[in-house]
Image: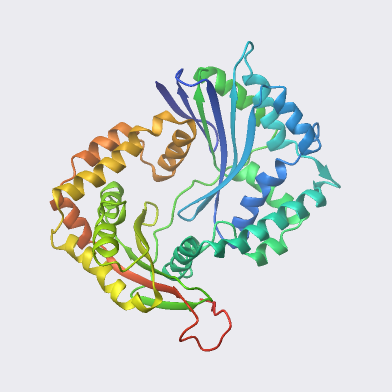
Length: 424
């Protein structure tokens, strides 16, 4: 496997992994923007709107037919949040049969990106209204997954006032406000001024891919782009919040943060605490003490924040919180077994070792690597994790500071019988 990573135009970086293992080739083009609520909505909507039709293929049916002619190639809209940066664009895959399809696929991808179907110089109202309605429905249904919703609310409390607190979908209000004119204006700025990360993995050479990418980017005029970087996070300190819904099972989330620069050390600590069925939270809080239905922990590399969470009976909220913190306190004092460390390492290393078995896993890994400015390949990261010992995990645990404790619980104890979802 041969990898080349270069800036081919101002603000446009191309990463090519020449790999003949796969029958499929993958291209990803992701534009980057600093996030706020309005930007989150627009970065989510614009790729979806662009995927609805081009000047040459003016509707989804025509685009689908063009892709079918290329043996079922796919061009899918994607938007993601990394720290206070939002990415939006497309991930495309295609196979080569008796003919090389690279030119045709990149040509169509260029049309989707830079030659959209418009009406009176802006996006078609029909496209915008359809995708806006879909997005509003998606935002409304987020609350159906109570634990995911609770973690998001805890994040909002923890990073109140900072860009990272923004939901990657935006809000119903910003979705309602998004119209054809404002979206098209942002789109033109996105493709002309924002940095862009391009990824390719497949059977073609770097030179072939660079030629095709430069060709399609001739369709847009580029201004001097800004350089992507995440701001230093600001955190709430010892903040507590309780919100009420008509639910039987409560969701408890405890958020902490660290200033340690070794993100994989912190990730391993989170895995020891709540990374699976052999973790401290699962083995002790769930299995031994039966204080929760589900539990886990996660670490965010960009914000250096860890969330420990549990689905609990509302009446067990206080005792469950103490039990979770007790497991974390064990890590601070070095009470981590070799078996816990070994199991946590195995899970993380297995994930890294299988990264190169999937085009999409590689695309996600290297996009994160670019934004983190960490160019170590998966095997090198795996080797670094393998060398972490209990003493370093103990030191990492001591570096975490409490930020927020959030409880989403039932209506008992609420001020009235309404659903109480106060603003921050």
